[in-house]
Image (cartoon, rainbow, N blue to C red; front, side):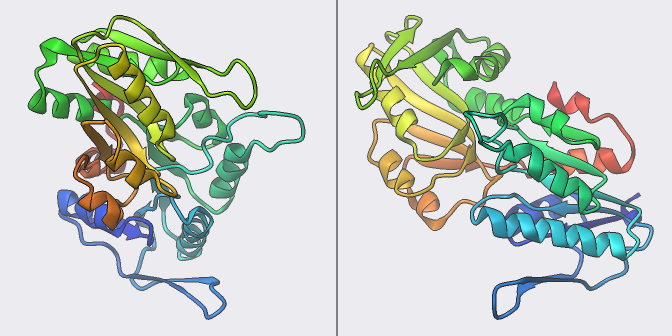
Length: 314
């Protein structure tokens, strides 16, 4: 089986690609993904892929457009080299927050990106914790959306006393995700209800559920600026929570987010390595990463052998 699999890595998260390769006991295929002087992307696959089952490992994280173009051009190179099947393994799918028309004359960028990926020659997609489940339907090719919840549940059980834990959704929209994790660790659920009465006024955060004396775990798919997370932690502590942790799948962490979280009242932020952690993340005392390499490696192995991937959700 492994003789017919090739793993090709873009530049977005080389460390994760190598960890997936180590799990599958497969070296990464020799490939050059580099820039011309004007920053155009040039790709050369330096080994035979004819008739092979090829998996491109590439998150569309910052710089998003560069990494997306790398993915598209790698796919085109593989298609023209007669690869049998091309699977895009996208641990973090960028543009996912633009999944509907948020106002008049605005794009649905997630659908556009899904079309671009499909047109480049990709046959199937493997991703982790899409921002919205309906994005699976934006692709006209098979798309597996894996969940980080089993990894998070295991980490929580290994590091915390779950008898006093309460899982908290930082907004009403994330309740389904938070409830899924709460069910796995047999914990109750609370919700942060944010509202802004008037434009320009600060948000009022109401806590739905009794968090007093509890170790609270905020759960979400993306942390970007970190503002909502830090404000939610303050609101929970003001309502009597003992301590606040956060488990987030994708650490986008743009701008001054790492500094904001490092100086916040969050006891610990646990991320996955779907986006390659920066040096600032690695040295922050209250930020820690858990790896999705095993989850993705197992999914790749099962996809290659046409085995069930859905059992990974259990």
